[in-house]
Length: 272
Image (cartoon, rainbow, N blue to C red; front, side):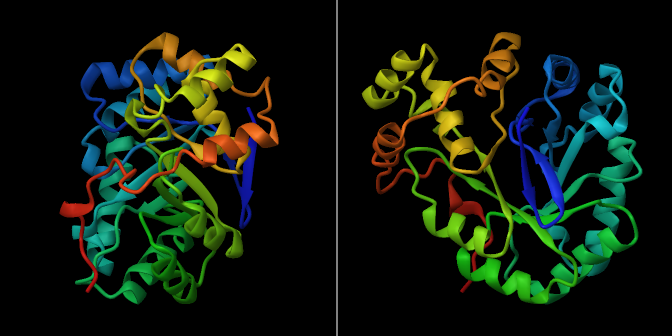
């Protein structure tokens, strides 16, 4: 496993995303991932699987210090008292005294960002989170959040894959010494049929999925692909024994396109 450093945090470069994983299947997948060598598990209160994620962590037999646990607070709960209540509820479901990373899942324009970030910083100060950060923040919101933060923000979690150019957000994160965590790092499978991806994969004896993950990791990001299949868990982790050339990286960057975003922002909170 490789690691990414950001504002004092050390984050595994590959983790398991758990969106849409439910029930016993979720707990089993988390356990299998950790036994296979994963060190990072990503969940959120809105996923409604924190209890099962916690069960999977305990079933793995790993010591707590060996697992980096991320959860996220939904935008309805970003007022200070609500954020604290939601954090405590997430910890209770996970059956943990703290998480390694607590994120604001989406910004909420109806709630003061200064108040939200202040409350988020308090969660670190009182020991509920070892590190804090944000998710789905634009460059402008990221800059504003950092101004309001009395504690370091270590992560911005965003959609990032070869079809979506996130260079501006990535550059902003680097300016603030923050890591970028990529969800949907394969574009939910959309990038895997591209001939460029197939050609690069063939050149390295790897799969297009591994190339997509390697691309983001080589750009300095963290990836959290989601799967419930043991063979895919193993495959997604096996990306540290090859390096993409400069020409291959450039060819993959060139796959970015207008309309490449997979996640529908239409239902997300809007800023005026």
